Each structure stands twice: as C-alpha cells, then as structure tokens.
Length: 343
Image: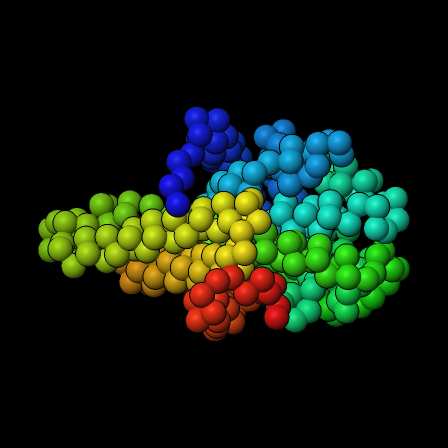
C-alpha cells in the first residue's frame, strides 16, 4: 500500500500543530491539575475552530465526514501536545457509533452528533470488556455504555484515578436505553476500531514529542566537556526511537486506509498499528528517562506529561497481548478475522 499525505492534509496538520503550540497544551494540562480550567476551555475553542470535533461527524449534522487518516492526523497532534480529555472517544469512537445508529434509536442521535461537531458536547464511552471504565466522565457531557448489543446513556459510579493525573476513570452502569439489537453490535465494532486507531495516534504523537524533547536535551546537556548528543551510544538510542516511530506511523496510516476501504484485513491492521505504536511509545519513554536522568521523573518537568500519558494509554483500547493474538489469528487464517477488538 502506498500512501502520501495530500497538500490539504499537510496544511491541516501544520495548522493544528501551530494552534496547539500557541495554546500550549502541556501548560493547559498543568493548570487543570490546580483547578484552572480557563486555558483548557480556550484550547478547546481553538480546536473546535480548526474543525477537529467535527471530523467523524456526518455532514448533515454539521460535521466534515472526514477520512480516517484525517482523524489520525488530528489525534497524533493532540497526543504530541499531551492534551487532556477523552480524545479517542469524543473525536473518533462516539461519533462513529452514533452515525452508524442513526434511525435505529431515538432522535437524539442527530442532536448529539450536532453537539459533538460544534464542540458544545464532549462524549466518552465504556464498552466492556475492551473499555471496562469510562475515561474522563468529569469532562464529558455525554457518557455512553455499550454492552450486550445494547447502548445506554450511562449512570456514573465510583471514580478512579489514573497514572496520568489529568485523566480519570469511572465505573458506569446502564441508564436510559438508546438502542439495542444486532445493529448496535455492528456499529460498536466500527466505533471500537476507529477508537483504537485514534488512541494509537495519540501514542505516536507522544512518542514524537518525547523524541524531540530528548534530542533537544542531548544537544544541551554536557558530559566530559561535550554535548551528550555527540556520543555514539546516545545517537544510536535516539536513532532506534526514530525507527520505531516511523515504523509505527506506516502501520497506523495503513490501518486508517483499511478502515476507510472496509477491508476484511482491517481488524488485523488496527491491532498491528496499536502494538507498534505502544512499542514505539515505550521505547521513546525509556530513552527519554535514561537521557534526561532523574529530572525526567519530576512532576515539574514537561517530559512527565508524555510519560504518564503513554503509561495511561498503552493498555487502553486493548492490551498488547490481545492485539498480538488478533494479528496472529489473522495471519494464521490467511485473512482478516472480522472480529472486533473485544472478541
């Protein structure tokens, strides 16, 4: 498969990068920890103006009906800037789920989709066993639970903390029924696949951010009278991180293309991308800690924002062992299994 970003996609990615750099997503997350939501609200307005919440929403609901690769580009940049909130859920999974269920449930689908597209609504999702807990319920206006071929507006229960301090996890239970039957299962399968891809894109963006931060540090930190970046061993470590990131990027965009074409190999490609993105992120995190030294562990250093994000998102949307098993099953069978991540 050959894939090259279009000029419009490159411009979109560059514009979003500029917006997030100007708004300083890492600083916004840090201010959120002390109860200051103003920077986050300003950041969300900027993201909405860029069209990010509308990417996966149908056009007749105010959305852009964008290609999955556009969703990947947006989520990668948001991971690159360590944005807080239920990004994979609200930008990718929930819009896909609701769009696939239009006409199957209540008339609220279109209202919710319009709210997502406009940025007025943030949504999150629990879908056991893949997503046993709903992320960032405290930041969401719509909380859904998909289970046993049924979709409910969820009732929130006990809250749990996360290794990423700006992230929360919540136990939820069934509330008001929205839709049920096989149509929910089919819609959920699509939603979980694109959600997994979006999570993988966040991890890729965080990996890139750590690589950039570590390379800068290696140029500035001196040992034996010279920058540590000039040492061959350090160069090899950074080069290995770069190779992992670029390898994961190819698999990630391949998965997005498979989803767009509804390829029977899409489940395999999604799992392969998730495995590669987690591996790349873990390698980037390990290298960042080794080369930054003890300062990398401190909450005051920006590196910690990406380190904790990677620790939180790595096991989310399916474990490494689960996704590796799905790839193995697909390769052994000679084609895609057609199963969703939670099977």
